[in-house]
Image (tube, rainbow, N blue to C red):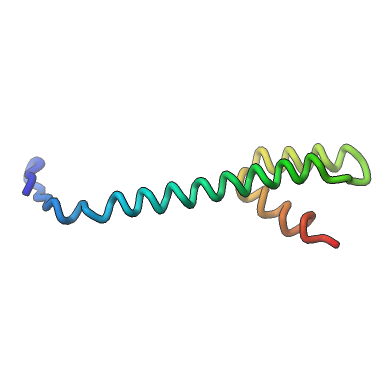
Length: 79
């Protein structure tokens, strides 16, 4: 048991932490890969004009993962 100014911490309470950190790291890596994939897809896609491409790239860059998800559902899934 570790005592930090009156608060008792048992070491077995901390054993779950590395698993959560590893899970969070995997999720973060997957989200980063998805974000990069959407930027590359947008840069390679043929739009009607270049203004639309620039706007979508800016949306993805500034809105981060939310912008990538919006791009995925609005443009990428468009047939």
